[in-house]
Image (cartoon, rainbow, N blue to C red):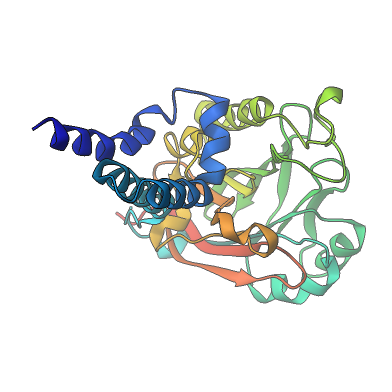
Length: 311
């Protein structure tokens, strides 16, 4: 009987991840980023070294399953409802990456009413302004641009607590507030620390703790706003992490009208991270969600129709 008890405990132990992931702070924030690779490595090592012991095999198999569930679980569609067709907003967002102008045609081809661009510079701003006369752009720091077919009012400029803009979009069907951000990643970068990071974080863009603080500040702005709110951009926030849930609890993940998928490709593809997001405040829904290729970028762009839910 004791032998089987050990096997059961070994099989259940990896599932403690779901109980502890929000309780150990920055430790589990980092583990969440590495979860698929970490689960695979642990499963292989324990499985090979302990292949003659049933408890070790149970632990290895269970660890692999936790990695799969923890990675794919946040991609399951939630079916929150459909958009009122008379009040829909076609929305797109992308991290343009190294190519900048190479991706301009792909961005314009989305025919979005509102477009959010991360890592933007002056050349792309000038190119997109030909299609979107209403726009704001900040080329330093978070490097965020917002382009709209409708008038924009700047509510808050980029600053230490906001890596982007807070804007009021004056859409024909009613105003809504947009928080367009490019949150620095809590990760190593050859370029050194970012515009808002403490000096001792080099060579990191920002610390894991400061990244969480920025996400909490963004969520706070949304919850205290009495207008409909949209949050979008490259948040460098995996959807299996604590920071994602800090946004998804008060908001709705608009991209889960359909199945989610990793948004970052290239050298980080093995981590299966979805870090480009689109959130809407309760009362708004999403339709026709999708992802599109951006030349020279290590991100996929996102596109969706969002707006007040159809009643």
